[in-house]
Amino acid sequence: MINKNMKIKYSLFAVIALIFTNSCSDEFVNVASFDENSEEFFNSKEDYDAALVGAYDLLQSTYLNVMLGEIASDNTLAGGESATDVPGIQEVDDMTHTPLNEDLRNIFNWMFAGVNRANYILEFKDKTDFPGKEGVIAEATFLRAYYYFELVKWFGDVPLAVDTRLLFGDQDIVERTPKAEVYAQIEIDLQFAAANLPYVQTETGRVTKGAAQALLGKAYLFQNKFTEAAVVLDDLIANGPHDLLTDYTTMFENDNENNIESVFEVQYIDVEGAGFGCLQCSEGNVAVGFNGIRNYTGPLFDSGFSFNIPTQKVVDAFEVGDGRKDVAILDINAWANENAGVSFVEGFEHTGFYNRKYIARQGDSNIGDANLTNPNNYRAIRFADVLLMAAEAHNRKPASDDARARGYINRVRDRAFGDTDHQLSVSGAALTDAIANERQLELVGEGHRFFDLVRTGRAAQEIPGFTTGKNEVFPIPSIEIELAGNRWNQNPGY
Image (tube, rainbow, N blue to C red; front, side, top):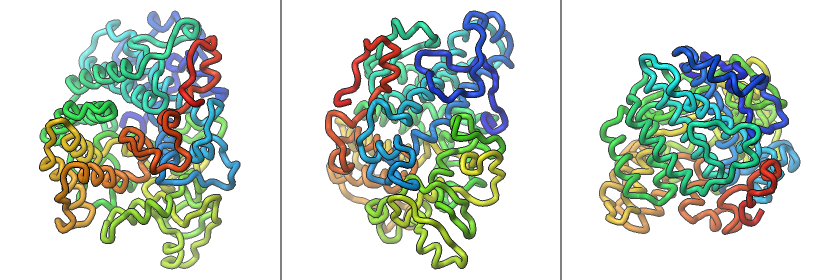
């Protein structure tokens, strides 16, 4: 398993770039020279494999992207202990974030760390040949696209580096690249990855052809390229190995990871933890501890920090009989009434609800800080997401095919209700709205909601404090602009 069994320690994969200026020193960061890399590394298959593990490693840092993607939306509130608990998270929840926000700076830094590690491999992709090399290059290319997709959806225009690393000194010459050009490179990378990867890997957790197709379809949707999205997503649905998991209640349990519905999954493990001085060093899913019940005592669950609290609004959005509700949302008061001995402390903005999909369970090793080392894999792309993206693409493309769109969304609804009595028959704009609503209910707690609202133009009407023309993207961290000699323009409104 690509990330659960390996932790990259090589200083050669540290990001020594203008972007990676985090005051939290990762344990990888001790690099003697930039010039010796090509001479002393990438001389064997093992070197390339080790570098690839390093590129995968930054996926684990996307826990923050997932958590803030919910908190920035109407799905959840920041929560925590108080209004000053992790100010960066509170600011994003209130839409008061600034270029000084530390958590946004972490996302910027960590995603560029991933870009640099992928580009490190691709910079030397022609140095040494070995059997299976095309697969390694395709995986690295996918990872670069994945990290850049995160960057462009959070920050808009960002520096684009292709097959070369951003190093100290580049801050004097590198510019922000228009997001259209970044998307164009993402498309090229994902098309290449899809053409050179299998649908099924021999090692669990590695990127597949399906993952590349799904992310390409999503990148098309974010650009309103609905026809292109429909083509690639139809191909994945028809020819890929994925399907909806029959029993939705087991979807997010640790003993059902990497199941038939998981198109791409970020691998976590509970045997190597970290601390608050270096959250990105943890091999566990940090968000799970943050989502947990504060000072909890009782069965099944572990304590946590009570962040990312579902709102009454999203709870009320579920229809009667929708089996997804109790999988996604933990009603702590109902749970306490059903189970003797349950106690907990109400945190800030307590609603009585918790994100049950990604909440700490008992029985994990949690070596290190128990709240920072949870083994729950993140289902980054699920087949249900693919079906709903395809439904949207067919509904919104110029030559719309609402019949096919309804077929896709009704597959998701049939699973949710356990019957065919709740299928939709609407078309046109009503179907567009229904698909948007279905995405919220199917994917609640998984980090997609804010960006779905932004790309469909619904954010201002759904998110309190959202300012049109400003909050569609987040601010470039001020330190990055300063390092670039104040040549970069800040995003509008910040």
